Amino acid sequence: MRLLKIIPDNTNIGFVRVRHIAFAITALLTIAALALLVTRGLNLGVDFVGGVSIEEKFASPPPLDQVRSTVNGLGFGETTLQQLGDKNIVSIRLPLPESTAPDATDKMVEQVKTALAAKFPGATFSNYSTVSGKVSDELIRNGVLAVFLAIVGIAIFSWFRYEWQFGVSTAVAILHDVLMTLGFFALFRELFTFDLNIVAAVLTIIGYSINDKMVIDDRIRENMRKYRKMGMRELIDLSVNETLPRTVMTSLTIMLALAALLIWGGHVLRGFTAAMMLGIVVGTYSSIYVSSSLLITLGLKPGVREDKAETSNAERVRAKELP
Image (tube, rainbow, N blue to C red; front, top):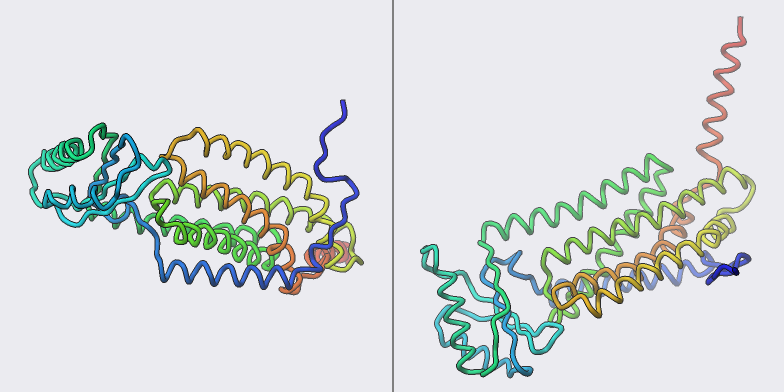
């Protein structure tokens, strides 16, 4: 049986040749993502801002103005609405009730359900969640800390595992992947809520990106030892092309699984799945065009670490031979 080969064995694409164009595109996308984060911001969910989130399912896509006026008429404070992937489902976000009674939230939710059912026949309650302001502050701090420590830890590992150039290029590429994901959610903030599911997706994207980059970095280091007289441009092109079939096949299989999850996973997982699919595309791009080519800009030379090791071993051997 003939094996399926998406990438031919003799593939020889000049990735390094277009590195300046790739760097320019990467810089523009990063600046655009930062601008979106500053100007539009993220549509933070209840996990991060605190409050009560109610999901209501309507018989048909409802007019949001009427839904907002109905809920605002109850006097619970400013209402924030968002239509989820299924336009019939609306997320209603309200401040926490002023009363400290144990059943205050349940009473609030019950009044909202009753008012919407009377205004929109066929409307049914799906679920609700509540997070206090103190907990939401802790979740924001812990989420940012988790992403930051993941990037720093991976950069330090690459530094000691290979050379310092690998650590810097890996950190730059992963930071680019994270910013692209955050920029996407800032751009489409009306469609997606940024909650703990998205933070989990960002950490998963970091894990996938570092896995892809480590495979390429290992091959680069292996070829640095094998082809000591080869220039870094040719060596990196050779290494990326050798790992390209594995990179493409891994990305395609993951995208197929995520596509099924996007179609049949429901609106609860839609944000997580969208973040993962974007992260796979961006992570593959940064591994091939950004991380590896950046090694040349950082001045990496073939065989440096190996030469040092051999010199040190030779000196120890000569020292033992001396009387």
